[in-house]
Image 1 (tube, rainbow, N blue to C red):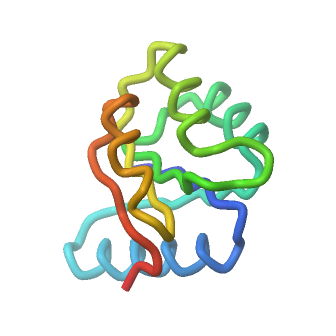
Image 2: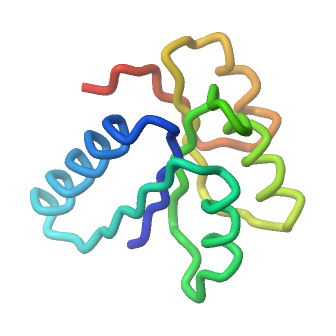
Length: 110
């Protein structure tokens, strides 16, 4: 299972990748997490990926483009990928419904 992560903080990506690796090992499943810090690079890689990710995890507040904007872009392109939005605040949780997100995580993730 391929998972794409987008967060402009490399430390956050590293932490989530470790959680995914630990979970995959515990469950005996194959998961590959691919982290991105730049929304434009993320979207280019998503578009050119032969095997689309099963899940996309997006940080909401970022400098270049918000995770909500990235999610809207994916949906406008017809993507039905599973989405999880995350942020340090829960003030964007209702916005997750607008992009048909499957979940919302409040950081820090433990």
